[in-house]
Length: 171
Length: 101
Image (cartoon, rainbow over all chains, first blue to last red; front, side, top):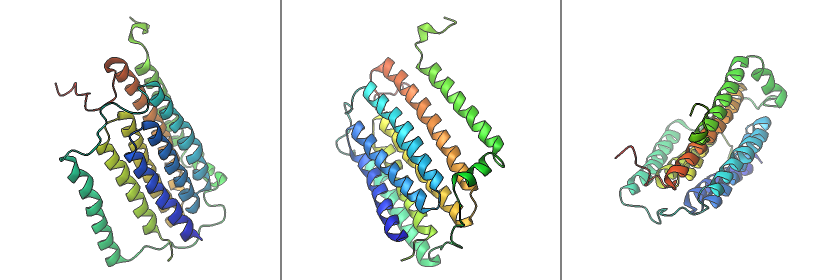
């Protein structure tokens, strides 16, 4: 069962990513990316991380992608003038070599060392909101507070960059 | 066939490569930012897979941190793009070469 779900979610996630790259229309790209993120949520739930699966859909597929869609629509509409129709010659090696090289390395590694199987099955309640919250608000409390400062700085930075320069208070 | 840690790592690598190639190929700066989001997402899969492998949920906390970093990156990146568009009327990265001139 896990096998079928893994292959469905995994193949669809890569497919969503590839479609995002291939679509010339930026809005369609964004929708394919949402598709890939939903598949990633499926992968998280297969990995015994139900809380992460929910957060992936809420934060990524929801909040972040809505922001992207807003900006695409606000700027210059879906299709960018001058988006390339086919790849120029210098880009072909850059696109073709990494996947081939990495596939060769992975196949060589797996042939030599075999697959790394899981140890024990995941414990009851592993990755549940209660379990993650215990870590987040206990052991990693400082990191949790610091990440909120990162978000605050990001908000202030975005406001500052986006503001009309003539209306800044010291002008 | 049993699904193992290796499967998840290879999946994450495939997703990362997709995002990387998209970043190289596309000229629309917004789509390039979306490719960066895809790469961050593939790293999250690696964190979750190793969390499951070691039966230790610390990785889940790092995935949550990564969500926050991705949100901050998207907010700032898009704000910069809006400002660039306001001045230059384009988000085509081939036309934005002020540093080269």
